Image 1 (cartoon, one colour):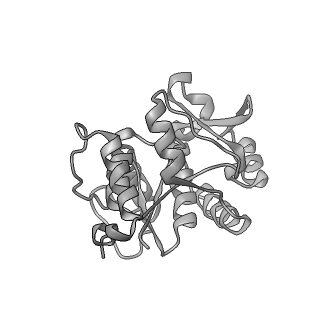
Image 2 (cartoon, one colour):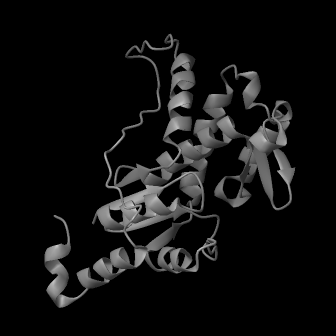
Length: 215
């Protein structure tokens, strides 16, 4: 079974969800707990996501792996725009705390990289995207494909993270650790009704719909 793990948000872009619904056998997104319910302004999309996308709650082992990766990142000099106190409100990134270890948040707070707000934490958008990428990689392992609608943002982060290993921008060496983003050409489902894709998936589950499932 081919599984796609969406990140970094809990809500998927409608067009990305349509593509995922068409391309993958199983769709998951990173949720803080098993009771989390996504909400979308569109009722049809909310129902489809609840029916066809599954919560992936990070295990203790996955959260610990992400914690170790984040601690390794913090051992390197960070740019000013990673520190939450330097970022205006509109450029901050909110994260539900249960996705990470409590110790991770304590470390980020102690280094002025995260601030508690309401039931969660705020970071700068670049740092938030970075740590969510690290968590997604731990959750996906070798069995799941990662999909995101923040490709442009991650592309900019790629260039920064490459310099941590000593590479110049635009130049990579074999000793540099890097975040690799692979872009796939996807179909344009903007004008395809979501209900049509849902019926297609429902047809797959019937005895006569086996031919619709990709191999």
